[in-house]
Length: 309
Ligand code: CDT
Image 1 (cartoon, rainbow, N blue to C red):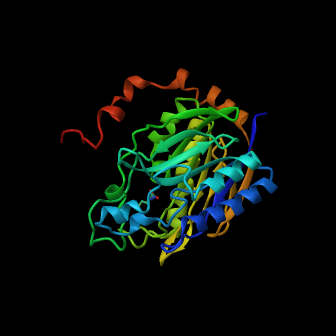
Image 2: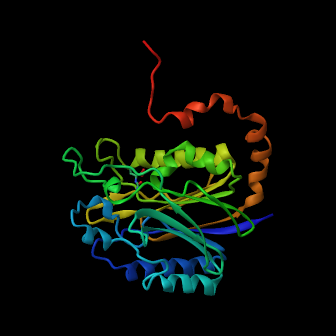
Image 3: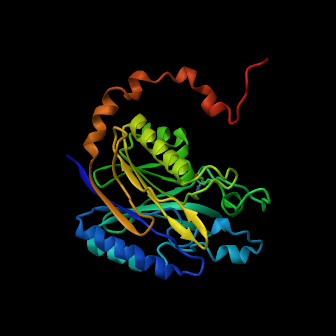
């Protein structure tokens, strides 16, 4: 057995006026709960330190930059790293990253149990749009504020296993899981901020959004025989609701634990990484069963090309 006791640290709403220090205080309370539950890894949401600011249209780059972290850890986040090291708990969380070269990314990190950053991932699939869209009920300006990630989907050896990360919209794309599956991934940690209603389709509400949330993470887990830890920032941020539904899916695609609120809530499961072995050696033994000679379109083509009529 190679057990990682995972704490999925769902966070409730963070309002626009809330400070990073307030968010970090809440993250530390969740870390303390995780410690009481024997967790060795805690996973927090996408953009865990602030409100989901891409819903706000901004033209002033200096104002935009106030939502970004210029260093990691920085003054506001150092206490979280310090507590995680004291408790010997690895952590993973999302934040807006401003690099020394001035590039903006939607990023996640993972530490080892000594609070050393061992992996970094920058969001690949940026949803939404880059200009104010009058057709939408609310804005989703990730394409305005972030560059597409430049990391690919790295898989890192740490804590006796193979770990990868993804961020929110990435979870809807099978390529995300398969690229990590091809590196033998055993646990994918991902955070999300998903509006409870589709801004372009009002009748797609929370029930549908939660259905899609489970559907994609359960399939990603099963089809790559990996654990998937998917953690929400949930609740109503300045009038804009986000779904909860944080969950852990096992390598058989089954949900083993799921959040029941839209508040700060810790879900816990002892995940045995050896549970990945059976699927990886049988039905999803990629080396024996994949037929790459038929998959060329997946990398040669981006959009749809229909057959000639
Ligand atoms: N944060 C994030 O990626 N949210 C998206 C919303 C898509 S609607 C423009 C998601 O896939 O949940």
